[in-house]
Length: 111
Length: 114
Image (cartoon, rainbow over all chains, first blue to last red; front, side, top):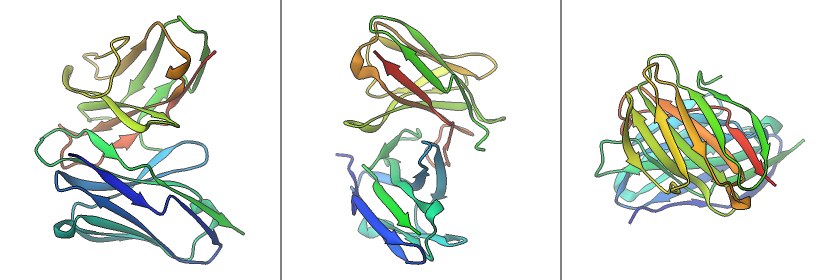
């Protein structure tokens, strides 16, 4: 079946710390994406990363598709990084874009 | 700003009522998706339209329906509302069918059923 699992469920950091969020997905999932949901509820696409590594400022993501996991790295965290981080993927056997989301990692960054 | 717009931002209504949520995709995007986010179910796919045609259905209740119009905006209709329908409803869009594409999400409509 289609499974997307994230860890840890909660993460509390002090400003300036680094963190790694993990997403494990089943064999029937591909086309991994990472999203950030800010405290106001807005869902922002961070990365479309089916494989390999991408970087955007203090954020970077790596997907190892052969081992069915993806990692999101946040360096020098800021209070504005707080919110929920979701990974999501689509059905490998489909041409359609329906996304299956994990339950998210709630990140709280304290000043 | 993702370029996807949703109205209204907030909606408070009573059980048994019917509401319509509206979404305008990013310019040039042909696919529109609807997702529901609730505390117990998380983020769940409801339905996808591509260029006016329904292409995929997820966990969408029979009381819910959607359509995509010729100008590509979409509406999600929720009827006979129940307390459990209270949730954040997102619309997203992508350029084509979506399997290898980034999806861009609107700000959401927060529905509260009393």
